[in-house]
Image 1 (spheres, helix red, strand yellow):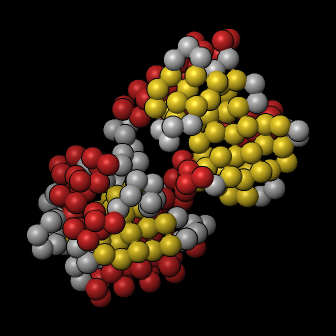
Image 2 (cartoon, rainbow, N blue to C red):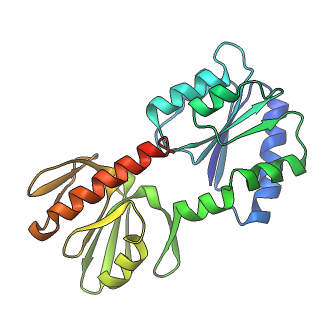
Length: 240
């Protein structure tokens, strides 16, 4: 799990980083990276969609508050998890607006962080977001654009142009991915991540990065239905 901590007090950033580094492994959560920012402006100046899994925002910061920073994040990214850090829980309505998972009250203890991890269901959320490909390769689900089967192996195409080739049957890959709401087979040997679809016509799918994938005639109606259901499901959950 890659996280960002946005707080105008360096000592508070360090304390949270060190506490998370110690406690997250207790719940099987691998902390793959932690970036620190002294202001909402500094964070938003470097923020990119899908850069982080979890963002901690101090509510009371000079100039741009944590709530305003969260609002700006939500205009760009509906999926990233947000935890608000504050000395008061008086921002309940705003936390619902930005779909914050939890309030972490200062000063916090190790037990407070453990309660946050449990209440925010970070362990189960990480498992939902990560899939282990055949061969034991872990991959963030949201990074998968599509997969392509050929000659007893599957090439997994990831965002950023990265590719992973694994030895697998198409049936095995469909069992692994298509049981999840965001994946569907669009033509023989090809599985697409519905999240990455930008538009679809009678013959082709165009992904958000411009890649085009064919759609089998027999699968068109089902794929359109699956895509609509997925978008509606996300809307119903508030985009999180």
